[in-house]
Structure formats: C-alpha cells, structure tokens
Amino acid sequence: MVFRELGTTGIKTSPVCLGTWAIGGGPWWGESDDEESVKAIHAAVDEGINFIDTAPAYGFGRGEEVVGKAVKGMRDKVVIATKCGLWWEGDEGEPFFEMDGYTVRRSLKPGTIRKELETSLKRLQTDYIDLYITHWQEPGDDKTPIDVTMGCLLALKKEGKIRAIGASNTTIQDIKDYLAVSRLDAVQERYTMLDRKIEPEYTELCNGKSVGIMAYSVLEQGLLSGKITMESTFGDAEYRNHIPWFKGENRQRVIRMLEGWTSLTEKYSCTLSQLVITWTLSQKGITWALAGARKVNHAKENARACEISLDPMDVQAIRSDLESLGEPV
Image (cartoon, rainbow, N blue to C red):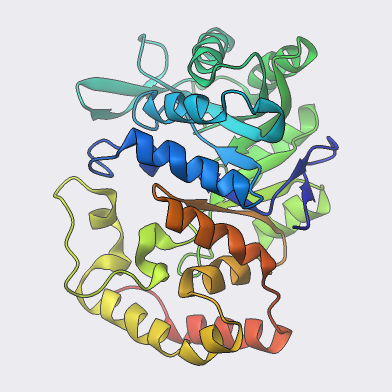
C-alpha cells in the first residue's frame, strides 16, 4: 500500500480510511452488531488500512467506544481521527438537531472542546488523538471566532493530546480563516461521484495549501456499491431516505449507469465498490476516501481498492458518464 502523509505532520496514512458513522448505529443506520463491527475493524487493519475515522456523534459515543475496543493493544498501528463540535451535554451552542432524546448543539467554544476531547479519550482508551476535526462549523453572528477555536486546538496540540488539526463541513472562507491562524492538516467534506460540489475552487484551494481532503460518503450510503436495487427498502428514520438519488427514477438512473460499468469491473477484476473508491482517489485534490464497513467482507473489499490503478482514459470515461447523468430530479 502506498501511504499518504497527513498534512505536513509526517504521519503516514492509508488512502482508504475506515469510516465508522454506521458503526454507531441508531435511527440513521438501524441495528448494528458491535462484535461484528470490531471484527470488521480488525479485518481492515489486517488488510493494510491504518486510518480510522470516528466522532462522538456517531451513536452518541457508541462509535468511539467500538473503535476503542477494537484498537486496544494495537494503538501504535492505527491513526485515529475523531471530532468535536456536536455537543449534547450542556446548553452551550446553537441547537442543530434532536435525536434519541438528545438536543445536539453546534459549539466550538474552548470549554466544550476540552470536555469533548477528554470524553473521547476515555471512550477510545487512548491518551492522544492523531487528527482532531471540528465536525460542524458554528452558525450565526454569535459564533465562536475561528481564531479562538484554533487557539484551543493549538494548545491541545502543544499539550500532546492531539497531533494534527482538521475541519469538516466548511466553506472556502472557513478554510481561509483557519489558515490565517495556523496550519490546517486536513478537511473532511462530502464528495461522491454523485455530489462533486467542492470541485474545483475548494479542492484547488486545499491542494495549493497542502491541506489533505478526506472525502466522505464516497459510496453514497451504499448506492454506488451495486448492492442496492430498486426493491431495496429502508427504515423511516434512515439517512438514505433523505438523499435524492435514492428516490424512484433517480435511483433507477444510477443503477443503469452502474450496470454500464461491467466492462470496467471485468477489466480491473474488481467490484463496483472498489472501482468507485479507486476513481475517487484518482481525482485531483482528494487525499483519502472514507468508506464505512460493519462487516468483515465489506472491510476487506474496500481495503483492496488501494491495489487498483485506473487507466486515465477510463477515469475520464467514468466522469463523462457522471456528467451525462446530470442532477437528481
């Protein structure tokens, strides 16, 4: 596996990062088997993935706890990214959403950041976080200034509690504001074959400043894996129901496009998931592809995408298909 550097930290990471949003379970994802999730994490590490992404909000701590259980005894073999900014244990910050009896707020105030970090360290059974990411940016005129947030993160880095700083769900101006204070090692943004809105201005800004981009939802919640059909159904509260591409004719158009890539999966002896992940990693400015897995076979499948190298002509042919697909109706 060819590893990629986390910003300018010298930390080497696998191009495929194991995402654990679904591992947290809950209404958005339905039932999740923690023991199976631990096995999936172990399988991913065995296949060469050393980068794991989680967050307190993934199952209200459950995602971090599962990761902590899985990496116990092999902390030195993995690079852990977790987050701060979604807060439900106080009144600080502006309400964002409600779920499972919790009111989740967006807060990037130093006080809440430090409390979140200490809790995350306990759940993850570690004394440091490799990459600490501001999960969602504070809204409104009264939001915590980015220089104040960065001041706290830089202090935590100096204390040895975090090794690198990242931001997620940001605007171009947010990135500029972070960089005006100090070094930003990574950003985590939604980027999929079906949602490429961060191209090209955002990706060019990050690329020019050596800020790595972690693309999340790469498999579009499974739709781009080829495993979801027109007959597939989901629980009322599941996140997939909020994605336009899962609805009616939109889903059918995507499935037809995927069926047209059979010649490519045969050419590269790969699955659709592997083709999608590899294509994503071949895009300019995209440093890592986050791919979730709650089962051993899915973890192994995603990891092996790192072994594939696509012909530039095939990369462009896929992009042409995506452009012809257009937007969801």
